[in-house]
Image (cartoon, rainbow, N blue to C red; front, side):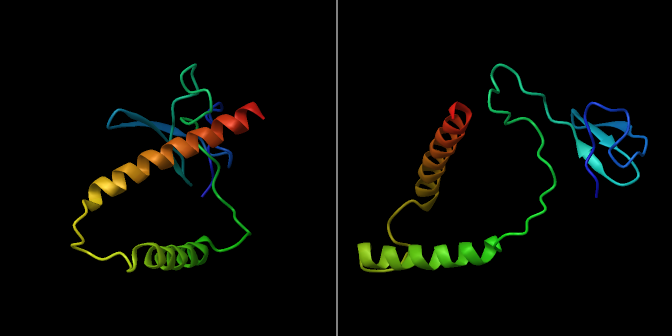
Length: 119
């Protein structure tokens, strides 16, 4: 798959692109790829959250393996802290726990993006 430039009439592979409207989104299509055009950064989008990113071409560590190790470490930490691993029907509202964690995560992410912008 090849990525398309939003500024050119052709995608980066040189194919002519065609515009299609799907559910209110502008979708650019050529023979090799379909790409949804994101909104360009505005004054309210200082960090570029609406800009598309390039196709990943990672050569580093396999993330799934790192996540598995993190999950096990987290389970062990919970067992030490609470005396048992997380189980269903434990008296807590799992959806609310998740929502609160996601809110915390969003705050940490935005903090880091702001720090990178300033630095």
